[in-house]
Image 1 (tube, one colour):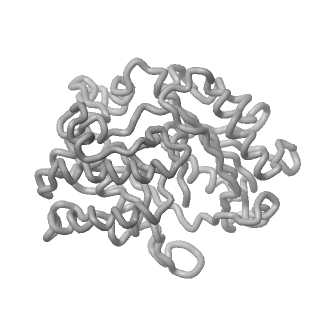
Image 2 (cartoon, one colour):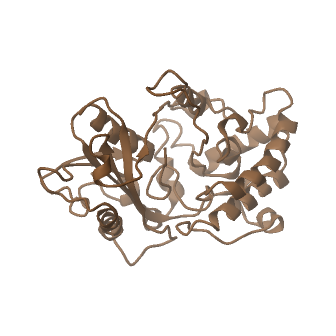
Image 3 (cartoon, rainbow, N blue to C red):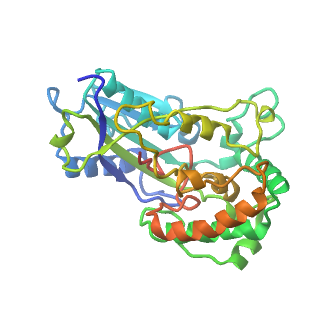
Length: 349
């Protein structure tokens, strides 16, 4: 059972909304769990059903310690093996994959949720993501950190606010095709450039909206995948890299972690015929991070601003993205929700 391929047999997502006030965490999780059961016929039978659950949530946004404790019943985790990955949805997927590849189990349910609307301030929550000795005390949060990154990127590359606005317009065109997206309204350049400034150069329409949602995925071993679907999606590889924790140690105009994680997926690292992943689609919390992490062929990811001719390359990339925005069934990266959780943006291999 161990060492074989791992399949994604089913994915279910709750529609992302700015404030799901009418349901608790358990309610939105139960919705996606019932969807998975309906798609696959899977049960919680001790012999052949789900016995391992990997959850993903955040103590801070849930406003409780041990955030996986409250919704345990909705996860199907009563008297089962349940383990939590905090915050990062892709790591939850990777952990579930490793459980199957190690032979520990042959069927794993991944469940994730987040309700950003419950907090008084999303920025107060993300302030806790920084070190307690300096970062938190000077008021760093994900918004102003994105603004620092955006300003450095713009200064090095020479891109303009108008080009950033074009990224938002095209991202909204993608999200309009995604029924699960939070912000699906189309916007034009004038609306983006006139939207309220949040932290220069980040404007309101540059940033992703406050979102509530949940997602579930059923993973199975190669031997069992066809019990639950006729069209399994095989996970070809998994790469992981983290940049320096202290923001001052990072090159904010580079994508160090993305490049090193992608290097783990090079031909020869994984079994099977060598093949480059055709798409790279990490989530992006603002328009400038969307420039470097986008739903286009990986060899055409927007160049770093320090590379020769990067200004012209970025302009060409901006035009190319318009083409791929119409071809890729995108979730609309700037529209659905929190980039640290699969609850808003399910990750497809």
